[in-house]
Every structure is written in structure tokens, then in C-alpha cells.
Amino acid sequence: MPQLSVVVPVFNERDNIPPLLAEIAAALRGKFDYEVVYVDDDSADDSRAVLDAQKAQHPELRVLHHVTRSGQSTAVWNGVRAARGTWIATLDGDGQNDPADIPKLLAARDAAAPGVKLFAGWRTTRRDSFNKRISSKVANAVRSRMLRDATPDTGCGLKLFEREVFLRLPYFDHMHRYLPALVKRAGFQSTSVPVGHRPRTAGVSKYGMLDRLWVGLADLRGVAWLMRRGKVTKVEEL
Image 1 (cartoon, rainbow, N blue to C red):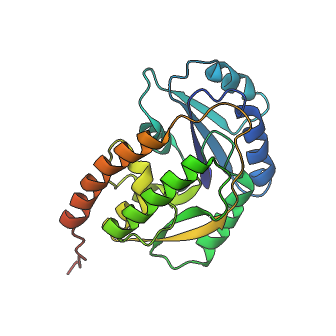
Image 2 (image 1 turned 135 degrees about the horizontal axis):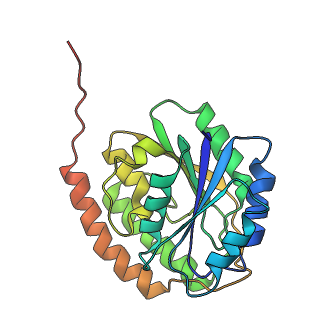
């Protein structure tokens, strides 16, 4: 069984698949026992065929396919459920996260206290458009104020977490944006680790400023409700 599963959700990212897989292999092969689980969210391009062809070069690769488009959170959820590793690393499929940062997250895990179960990438230097950077900055500020999750960048797709803890979290659409708060609600801790960020070189972004704003506002109220209702009780066996 692999120690680590790298889960990558994709939708219409055919040109980003081969280079990202090559970078994952360069960062992990021969250093860690790992697998890569790509989840194709019913892409309209030939991402599925590209992934199938990549299996010849990457024996660590497994491919899941959504029969209907279901969104990024569902893709991550299904990828984690199918994963065999005890720990999960997630990457966005657009190539903007650098797989070379995964060992940095693993090193942070090895140095952390046992109660820290989420290591969230922190894009200290964003390589996005002005509108995207502003919308993320506003969303992070509002979220941090309401949820007090002590995380400067929950939107970064690069994360490392324990599989068992993730599967105990409440599942809902867009949950991947609120993992630090949900992990806190479950009684564990998270920490942010500075990572790199790169400009998109192929394909197009799937979200605009208004999409992020309206979806974020609706979800934020729901997560705040979950945080208020959450309760963790220590249990002793006599």
C-alpha cells in the first residue's frame, strides 16, 4: 500500500496533464512510496484519453471518471475515498501548484505535533490576474473573520492531510475551500506552509470573480452554522 496518494481533480485540462504528471514523478519517484489518483470531472475535451495514454509512462497513475460533471469538491472527495494512502496530497490540475512543494509539506508533517492533521499550502506570491487576486484577498479576509480558522490562504489547491480525518468531515459542494475550519471543528489542528505558485500556461480558468463571490457567501454561512453546532468530546474507557 502506498504511503501517499496524490489526488488531482481535472476538468478540460488535457494540455496540463502530461507536464504535471512528469513533475509529480520528478518530485516523488524513488523518494516516497506513492500513487497518483486523477479524477476527471466529465471533461468536454479529451482529458480522459490523455490520462489513459499516460498510464504507460506512469505506473503510479490511477484514473477515475465522473459520468456527470459534479464539481471540484466531489472530485476531491471521490479521489480521497478511492485513494489507498494514509496521507493525501492534493494539487490543482491547472499546473499552477508546484509538485516540488509536496516534500516540503511532508517535512512539515514530520516535524509537527500529532494533533496537526492538515498542512495547507500558502501562496505567498500569487501568479494570477488582478481580479482573481483581489477576489481571493477579499474572500480570505471575510472567511478568516467569520470562521477564525487562522489560515491566510484556504484557496490553495496544494494541501496535505490525513485520509481518515478528511473522510470524517461533513461533505458538501465547495467543501475543499473550508478544510482548515472543518478540521478545527473535528478537533484537530492545521498549519500553513509557504509554497510557490505559477502562472497558468495552458487552458482557461473555470471560475470568475462573481462566481467565487456568490458561491463563497452562501457557503460561508453554512460553514459558520456547522462551526457553531460542532462539539468534540473526549471519551475515556473505564
